[in-house]
Length: 469
Image 1: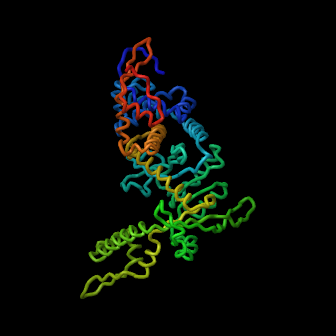
Image 2: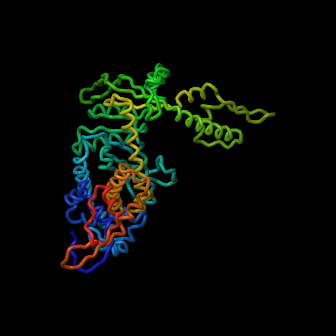
């Protein structure tokens, strides 16, 4: 606890709440181990980032003047920059290692990446790539790994902005080896699918569940013979309102061995999970028809877009006539081919045999998407303006720690169905107004807590602080 040197009255309830989360997740202990001299300052900035939605760090001293927090002193903009710059790669990796030991090897881990726009051209990994927020700025990519059981993140990595998703997996596997994780299970969306990645996952003896494009030959050759069979009522899930079907298939594993000058070819067991949703099929068809109408209009008005050229060629024949001008005719065969796959989803796993279990596991990876939203919006990471490389690395780390707390709160709110009555901000506001009174030489005293606040603490399995009431 921070020693009391002067009499003060501060907001305390949210700090008490965050202290408890730091204790149960082990985050506070792991920060203390990795950053013995600065862990309190890191936690204070984390608390500020969570409570002061989107506010810049320059306002920290103003916030600190009214809030009880771990460091107990104001942190200036210059000091926070020095703090970020002082966080080393070794310290970060040690933190990932300690957090990972608390979580991995129990459940599937969800892995995904996002792009973060940057105004700074001096950062080494800033490149122009496929910006996922559709912003015309250079970017870095950020990869996140989540434990699906605790629903908490425990690892991230900053990557060059021009590296596609499919290429980032090799780096993840190398990092997992370095951190000593040998038996992880990963969930990946279809952007990570490639033959090389599947072979890498097998080579590292990892269990995986990955989305697969329906256009893949591997999927089509196995889907076509069972299209009718899988849509029998016996394969229908009332819970998820879709048909689910699985079949064992063979993966031809390939590994080049330069030291022996040969290539291994071996058959490996794989499960193909197929799903058909009638509702999704209708949505897909509606979206497809709207897209075709837009493409046709672009052709008829001669307002072609370079990025649509492949789609024009695939779905339309265009003729120019002196009398009737531009005539656009749809390629019926191609349209029918596209419609055949509406409503379908394909997953591949070398571990999960049951299609519903595979679907549930795959859908839980949505928590990574929600985490990216929290990082970009609430934790102010949408655009990077930090210039020195080391300051950016340090700030990313502190924002990542804040994300652990936010993810914990969000997971508990979902578990207790609190989102029906509260937003995340309303929960934080409810706690934040609880005051404490500090008097030198005496124990910290907590102001009145309402019944509603006490019940809210209990929903999070937190014992309310003993108040003066």
